[in-house]
Length: 214
Image (cartoon, rainbow, N blue to C red):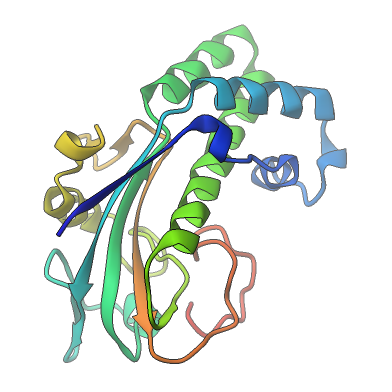
């Protein structure tokens, strides 16, 4: 069964330090914090957070099969090792954030870049909120998205079609498999039987390079 989640913008906190990380810095000292705060406020004012997800069985016999996609690569197989089930997730910040990025990019390339990074931090914060709310009697693995490791970006199509994202949350794919609205995420979240120490973001943005699930 596909479930849909919506969150008000006020429920999602965008961390300025995370925006700075997306900008290529590891602290907010690398850029004028007023610009970061301004862009965060603008993204928060217009974001419309929506997500849909479903719990699916996982089989692994030489390749990973979760119904909506089959992957022969090693990355996802390693991430889902020991998992009998997984969540398939799609989430978006909505078209207004995309329009804001485009608008601010015209006004100022720097502000456009910072707004883009604020949008990235926003969607990850939303996904973190979803992770913490998922009903699970076992333990969740870090989010793993198409395009990470050797999981082909083409897997986006199987996930969006399975979750019917165009109807459920207004998320679709272009011919080049890019998501629109741009600040959107698709991901697979393994449900493991053993507790893991990874409680942070998905693999796509996590800086822990020695994680056993990468």
